[in-house]
Each structure stands twice: as structure tokens, then as C-alpha cells.
Length: 311
Ligand SMILES: Nc1ncnc2c1ncn2[C@@H]1O[C@H](COP(=O)(O)OP(=O)(O)O)[C@@H](O)[C@H]1O
Ligand SMILES: [Mg+2]
Image 1 (tube, rainbow, N blue to C red):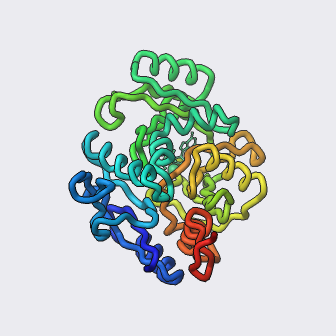
Image 2: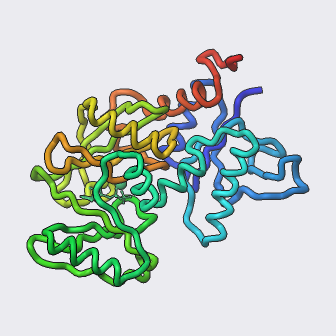
Image 3: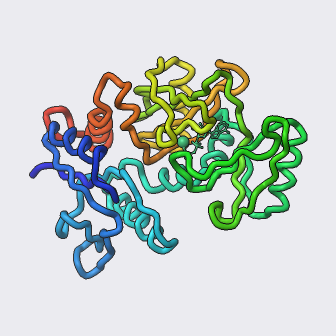
């Protein structure tokens, strides 16, 4: 029977089609499954999980492409399904634990820092008064800070505070968009005009491709209008991205990197465990979905190119 992979996603589109095509080329079936529709039913099967499209069986592996937001309970269950798959021996490509740690920007910063991976100074706190003191102190030292939603993505909800162009900007209200939590990272001012950051894709522990995201605005996400340019994957860039992916135990990851004091002083801003690669594909000479699928099949499932499972 052919190998069957669940592509966990709340959105069927370009990425899932890319993955399905790459799987098909390897004789593997890729079926899109919304984690919202997965359930626990201890009467339905021996293992107690129901993954739509897989009957009473489990997929041979799961690729996590997207987890929709929801209530705390809903998200807990969705992540619980991924944890359960791992516990049942199903490889989950980016494991739930890695995804949890990278979705939480504060945890990512802490783990990077603890592992000695260069990353800007970072604070996360619930007390607005404490956060205000950090902003005052940093501002007095001439630094701006980036206030980010803890679970943010695509450059949404970022604000520059502290010393911005010589003017002090105070901490805004943390209720609402920031969930009453201050996640603050020291701002690294752009070294060039327009500014840029690097996005490096790591697959199976190796940095495989990189691009520059360039824009006049300091937020360089593709979704915020940044242009994607091919970038040389220099050794320092590759090594830094690989160490960040390793620190968060990622099968594949998109690493955001900025130059700090100079082009030789590289710092990791963020690690994306559910990384999109449509923009990166435009400036990458090989097929990224194929690279991801090959790594999953070969490294995690032990399937050789001819489809035979390694002994
Ligand atoms: N500390 C920082 N210094 C300078 N620019 C930053 C900093 N943090 C974020 N940015 C800019 O904002 C973008 C989005 O921030 P990021 O932390 O990657 O959040 P998101 O999950 O929204 O992508 C980055 O790619 C970078 O261009
Ligand atoms: Mg980012």
C-alpha cells in the first residue's frame, strides 16, 4: 500500500498543491486535513484518534502547514492531535513541541539566547509598569524597541516605541491586540537604504536557500510589500540559520536574520516553524516543496528514492 501523508492545513492553496505534487512524484499520497476536523474518539479506533480521510488508520506522517487560530481550548485540542500523532509513532514534520516553541516569540528568544545564538535583547512581561520602565531605560540609552504580538506573523501589529528618530514614544495600551503582554525586542536600525532582512530556509538541519526581503518600511515581510531578491547563502548566514533551527528542534524552518552593528554582525530575529515559501520560491533555482518532501521521506521515514523503506 502506498505511503499516505496528512498535510495539516486550514487553507488549501499554492503551498498544499506544491507539496501534493512533490509527494506524487515520489509515489506518495498527500491528503489535506484541517486540524479543526480531527478528533479524539476512544470508541472509533484502537488509537483513539480520527483523522478525516484516513478511516480508522493513521497517516504514515504529517506535514504541518497551518493551524487556524481559535479559542484556547480549540488550539489546545489541535496541538493535542499533533502531540498524539507523535506519541503514536507518527512522524510530525515540524513536531508540535517545536511549533509551540516557535509560535511563542518570547520562548524562541529565550531558547536562542540560552543556546548562545545571537539575537537582540528581548523582554516579555505582563506588568505594564515593568515594561514601561524597560522602555524608559532603553529610550534613555537611545534605543528603539519593537513591540510585537506574542503569536504574531506576517509583520502584523508591530510597533516601534522608545527612542524613535530622537523622539520618545511610550508603550501603548497592551490590552487587546497584545493580549496584555509586552513582548519587546531591541530595534536594529537598518544599515542600508532601503533596508532589508534575510530569510533563510533550513531543511533537515541544512540551510538550503536564502533571499533578501527589501523595503523602505522597517517591517520587511513579503505580506507587507517587501520585494524578494535572491541572496547569496554565505557561510555565516547558513551557520547562524542552522544553529537557530537546531536550537528549536525544527525539521524545516524559515529564519529571519538582520545585520546588527555591521554586515558581519548577524542576529536572529525570529524562527518560523510553519514557514511560507511562495516568495522564496520565486528567487530559488530548485523546487522547495520537493526539497522538503525528500527530507521528510528520506530522513524521517527512511524511504529511499525508489520507495523502498530502509531496513
Ligand atoms: N528587533 C528588530 N529590529 C529591526 N527590525 C525588526 C525587528 N523585529 C522585527 N523587525 C522587522 O519586522 C519584521 C517582522 O518581525 P518578526 O519578528 O519576524 O515577526 P513576524 O512573525 O510578524 O514576521 C522582520 O522581518 C523585520 O523586518
Ligand atoms: Mg518574521
